[in-house]
Image (cartoon, rainbow, N blue to C red; front, side, top):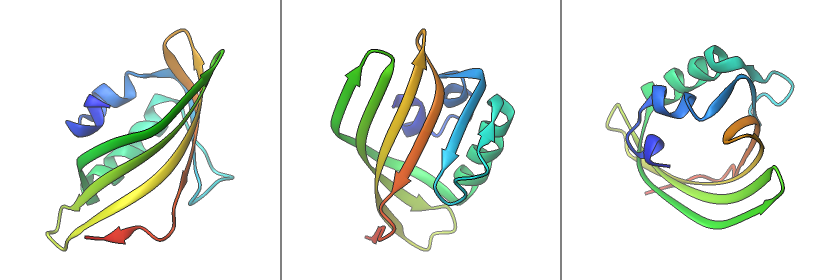
Length: 112
């Protein structure tokens, strides 16, 4: 979480396995594969948005699986405003690293 708030791509990527898969629901059939694929996604994301706030409202773990409901306060890098995005994350964990993450976002992201 601290890595997201710091907008630190390297620190976020370090929490994933080298062969990770990130499924973003904007393109669910085209996962971002491996740390370089994840980095590609994050570079584009952080070029557009700065994470200004993060709240975890629910967190459930069972064995090597994790489910979380989060809220991200995002500020547009072009100064056009901010958005509060609600997401559900489903992670498969191996050791202490994320092997697979599926991120579902509320499509009605509220402008602040």
